[in-house]
Every structure is written in structure tokens, then in C-alpha cells.
Length: 432
Image 1 (tube, helix red, strand yellow):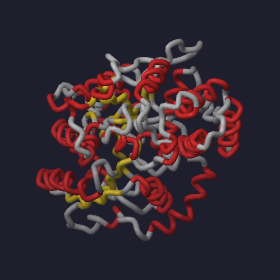
Image 2 (cartoon, one colour):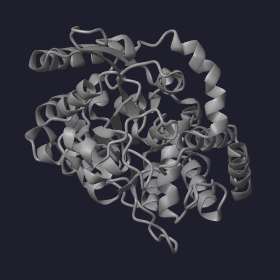
Image 3 (cartoon, rainbow, N blue to C red):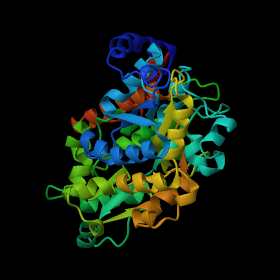
């Protein structure tokens, strides 16, 4: 988050400070039992479902250590603003969940405990964590500002019956094949692919992946934005063209921002979906696991010079500690507990995500086809989003630019290289 955008949140921070649960006040009196405040991000079907999932584990931690943890599950729509409020005011929780793409932005505030080697040793050691996941926990060249908790990656989900009915033997491995396959599956009120066209973060994630395949970068080595390069223009156009040119995406998807694309896939309205660990969500919508297949996200058939073999961002949730905590040792003890083998199996199994530690990767809980595809992707063809202070602003601005391009496509307005370039140039100028 740039200084300008941090300033924009300062007023919200002051207003929200009075609403935050203050870790400073917990357990600070002499002789009192230690108490931590934990903000957990919403991972399950509802805030209450997450509370029901987490509370038994927190009770277990208290029984083992005598440290009580008060948890509040915070919706994603509020989480970043509240984290920035806590960072600005110096008041807030002890331990928090953060989207891993925000790590460098929050690290730039100076409000988070950095996990140098000595601190990592207190939570089990650096070698416990999946390297790719740990790489998405802070700015390059600095100690991580968090540790990974839940690991996620993108995959291609496809409806087996729809494929069989259309005579399609296997999932596409290139974007050209995906477009061709999607056209065969589009018709009769059904569509080849569903997307979240009005979701800025989702759009930015795909912009990053396509950009990597086209040889583009969204920031240069100095951390300055390079949004409107020819490579990034081509990447964004390729993504939006799934609706604009290939016409395998329902124009109504230009308004999707609350996981409606997952519902369309689960309900048979779309035959393919690009998503992070969708299995648990599909199950909650009564789509049986044997009704769909999972494959790696496609690549370009003929990548240009400089194109990278990347088909997913390193997605996931990190666990961070605020410097303002007066119970740092207890907070680190809680981080160690949440990243222990037993908790990694229990929680990631519930949420359908992958463990962030190497020691349980072969556990039977993660042996299903979905988890195998995600594991392989994260191990071989995933890359972290740029770990720069302005990353979260990039997601907002570029994601919104793509939202506007999808709106153009849905309205029948041509999406050209020039119109894409103009949107990306405008986004880049807003960064300054």
C-alpha cells in the first residue's frame, strides 16, 4: 500500500480503532492469565461456520498452554481496512489472518512482527514451511512479515457429463483449446466457462498469471508499476476475450463478484471454472465430487519470448503478529500451534485448502485428485504476486480496469488492444 493510499485509510483507521478488539489490554495486568485476540479471515460458508470450526481448536490450545484466545471472524470486505486501522492506531488484535498478497503492503506499515530466522525457530523453523508459500509472506530481501497458514492455488474444474455429452475426451491444456472446447459447450442457455468479471481481486489474479505467460511484469525491479506494457496488454486482452471474442462466457458474468461463477458451475449453467480449491464450496452446493474433474490451468500453445511456465499465483492465507502485542511470546506460541502438523491437517481438511508445512503433505486428507493437482501446481508452476508495498493497490486498480473491460464486452463494445492499453495506462497513472 503506497503512502498515499495509507493516508486515505488513516481516517478509517481512527474511526475503526474504537471498534477493534485491543490485544494490548488483554492479559497485561500482573498475575492475570494471558489472553490473545485473534482476527480470523472468513474461509468457510459463513462467519458462524468458521467460529464453530475454530473454537474447538482454540479450546485445545488453551488446555495445552493456559493461554485463552478470543477469536473474531472478519469478512473479507472489511479485513484489509481493519488491518490498516490496527496498523495505524497501534491498537488491535495480537494475531491476524492476512491474504498472502497483502504481506508486503502490510509489512511496509512497520506494524507487523518480522519472522527472522530466530523468530521462525520459535514456531518450528524455516524448513517446516512450503518454500513457495513462505516466499509469499513478505517483501524480497526482508524477513517474512507472516508465516503461511492455508495454501491455495488455481485449477481448472470441468463438468464431466457436459464434456462427455459434447464428445470431449479430455480437459484443455492450452488457452486455444479452452476457447475451442468452450464453444462446443456453449448453447441452449449453458456456457463454456464462468468468471467473476466484477471482482477486482479475482481479475488481478488472472491478469498476473496471463501476464507471466506472456512475459510481462506488473512492477519493475525498483517496485514501480509497469502496467501498460505490450505483454500485459496482450495478457489482459486474452483473458477478457474469453467473453468478448470467444464468447464462451455469459455476458452476465461481467456483474459477478460474490462467487456466483462457482454457483453457475455447481448448478450446471457453466461447464468450466477457474478457481482456488473449489471442492468444499461445490460440496456445499450439492455437487458431488465425482461430477467434476480437476486439471491444471492451461498455458499458451506458443508462448512468446520471455513467457514463463506459470499457471497460478501462490494463493493462500498467512498468519501474522502485530508488534503492538504485549503478549508476543504467547502470540508466537499460538502461531506454532496453528502451524503444527495436527492443526494443519484438521483445518486444511475442513477448508479444502492445502497445508503450508511440508511434514503433512502426504497425509491421506490431501490425497484426493483436487489436492494432488493443487499440490503439483504450487510445487512446480505457481509464482507469488509481486511482493511490493503497492501490491494491494495494484489488485484494486488493475482488477477494476478489467471489470470495466468486461462491462464493455458485455455491452457489445469492442475490446481492442488500444482500449486495454488505455485502461491499464489510467490505472498506472492512478498509482502515482
